[in-house]
Length: 117
Image 1: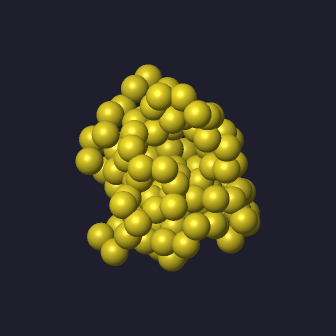
Image 2: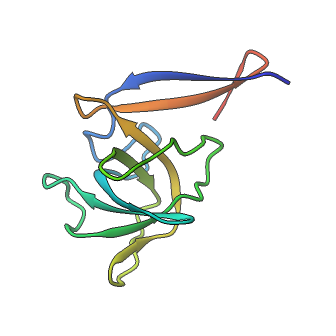
């Protein structure tokens, strides 16, 4: 069963929600762990500033892109942030790379000519 990955750019993470209504924020990757990343939200984000630990075990079928320290990403999550130190997000729907304009590079998996989200 062939699987193709299409990439296209959409403005979305500059807003606070994706088209499906899930909250988002843009951040810079500070550290990469086994199943987590530590990120710092951009200064203009409404989400708390400071380090946030985010799971990379995403709920969607979209794979997490290859990340490294300094990568700018958009995090799509369920809106719940655990009040720990550092803050923690356990339910993540997707992690997208940001392009040079701060726009999310959304990914979509296509299986046998059909889109799967």
